[in-house]
Amino acid sequence: MGLISNGSTVFDAGAMASGFGGSMTFIKKLTASSSGTLSFVHGSSSVILDSTYKEYLFILKDIHGSINDRRLEFNVSIDGGSNYNVAKTSTAFEAYHYENNAAAAGGYVTGRDLAQGTGFQILTSDAGADNEECACGTIQLFNPASTTFVKHYISRMVDKNPAPATVVNHVAGYANTTSAVNAVQFKMLAGNIDTGTITLYGIS
Image (cartoon, rainbow, N blue to C red; front, side, top):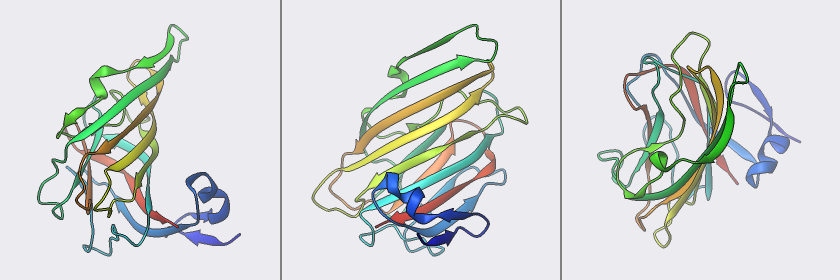
């Protein structure tokens, strides 16, 4: 199995990519520093987001917002990042467990789904902003360069919210466009992404 590096951490490419359908190729890593948005735009700053790969993987690590009880969101663009307003339809569910064992449950979350909504897709619960609180996870984007089909995405995130509790968030849907998606943007519902990294890989 080959080894690849994202600039700081070495991954076992064969083992890591086995769950995503193929080998991983590092493309770009963005590091938040009180950032209003983090954007991956094809052709900008060495970002590849075209037909080179049929699947793209974003790995989000230690995403920490500046404001308590705020959600991480993402959206896509078909015009190189000039507008992030593609219509999306999605479904969302979560499971949570309080630190003190006072509550634990799971179920569908209607407030995080979209029905042809052009706004940002919510990926996490109301994540906390205390020093030890953050969110981590992955987003898969399938065949964004297609000019025939819609663009499916799957997100799996975990966060610690102020309850305090751990929350596992699952979101899946599609960007309802047959135009090529060539940019992806992340932001908090309010405030900045204080710290954290988002790394983009192409899957072949």
